[in-house]
Amino acid sequence: MKPQHLFAALLVSAALASCAQTPPPSPAASAAEPESQRLSRELQAAVGTAACTADSQCSSLAVGAKACGGPAGYLAWSSVGTDAARLKELAARLTEAQRRENVASGLRSNCAFVADPGAVCVAGRCQLATPASLR
Image 1: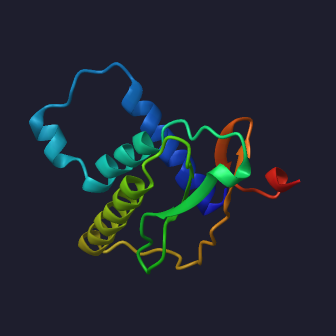
Image 2: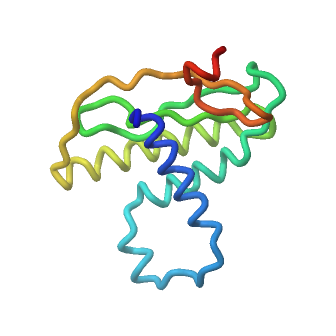
Image 3: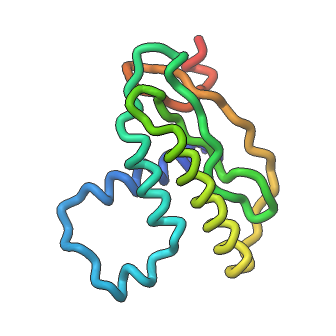
């Protein structure tokens, strides 16, 4: 699986998990949660459904930080009903949080360049472009 698809899948999983009907976490559990996980949920909530009617409404945004530099992946979002400034601010905070967490944990990565795939409108939702979506 490509890194950007894996990251998108992780973001979607986090968003779906946050929608489950579970009791709120205890203050001790919240304190143990990495900041990047909380920011990832906020970012996914800010993206929302990424509804679109045309490719021109879709954009991709670099998110996260690989241990040796560069974004961990990209997130597709729609200009329709999305606060772009807020989205970019959350992405920057997430990137910085992941950088700090990478340094603190001594995490290493493969240092592979993750290219921006762009975003397209498919079935009324913005998604990262793939060779199949560009046909």
